[in-house]
Image (cartoon, rainbow, N blue to C red; front, side):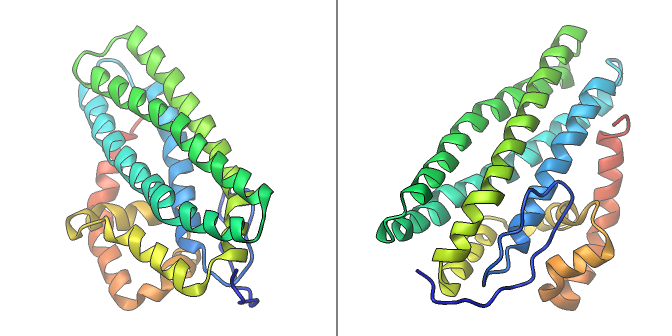
Length: 239
């Protein structure tokens, strides 16, 4: 168990269920959760409102869903392979049965979410190439189910799993988990990921979340934000 007792200030973003106080800065985790919630809300609205005949919009949505799905899959993979197993070893050493149950639930919830994401990807592909009202209705149901299921999972993680990370993981272990999360994203993905993570946040929230990136982060964000925002308007023009 970590011997650190100092508490870091934590981000509190829209939709967030709780802040896990402790020695680790969970800002990166909270930003990702905010972005996932934001995206699924926008996808649910876009599917209902995008006209069947606007093929360009549906193809933009399909491409954007692929980006979303890839990013969420990477996020869950890091949790399942890097964070939860290490944390499970700690809670078992502490004979924390409730902690073990929480971590087992995290993995089980991922297994329920993944098929929903796959079915949404199939639905967006169908709408991009052969849109019809029945396919749109099916896709709307799938996206809404994914939004609700993921929302429940993120709330569970924020209220129960992340406090375990604050209590049990050492500073070095949390830093290693953050490096693992960053290592799966190549430089070619940064023009999407940086403005994607910051989209919808205030300047103060961006500074709090990414301030450690310093001037270089600010420069990269300014360089990439315009193209990202244009692509967002193309995909979510009716949301």
